[in-house]
Amino acid sequence: MQRHMVPFLLGMALLTRAAAQDANEGESKRIFGIVPNFRTAPLPSPWVPLSASEKFKLAEQDSFDRGTIALGLLFGAEGQLMRSSPAFGNGVPGYARYASTSYADYVIGDYLTEAVYPSLLHQDPRYFRRGRGSGFARLGYSLGQIFVTHADSGRTQFNYSELIGNATAVAIANAYYPDNRTAQDAVVKLGTQLAVDAASNLLKEFWPDVRRGLHRRGEH
Image (cartoon, rainbow, N blue to C red; front, side):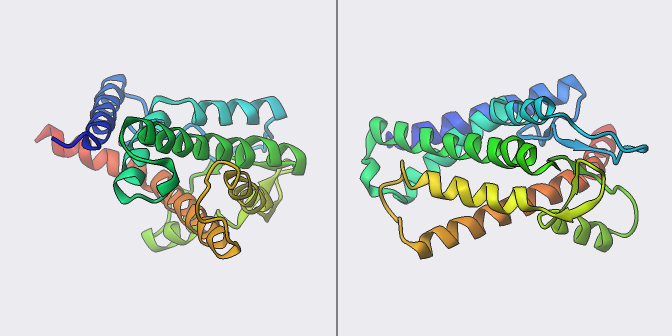
């Protein structure tokens, strides 16, 4: 077995263990036992805003969850296999740089989009699951939440925290990614991150439906 496959296999083992633990807990704090799901909530009625400390608590939960750590390890291995940053080198030292920077991307992005900018701009970082209507309507709603969010007042407005937060995270990443620092690379990275967040919203919206289907299948 090649040495660069070991971190990948370790990451997969951690993900499998996290999924099994989540199933045993009977909670829905992680999607497929991996993706953190702490900031998903039903729309409160009457409206109850989050304090700044509560926003930072959400960012902390997402950033230091076992699933986020496992994802950092896994995508660090993927980055090394694809040699996405040749300056990081090879072998264990190279993987350590890939994994640490991959995890740093998650932490910085979470804090900027869920805590720092939502606090400064008085926006709510939660994803409010719709949970009703046609699948197409829910699909459009979940993807649209990248661009639309709630203010602390409860009114809907453009999601500045998502866009500016991710743009700032991309700019910060230039400090520890020595390769691919052009403006075009930055635009691609920002677009990729927004697409990832949109996919995450999609999972958050439909996860209860998927979980119920998996539970019913397990009973047969």
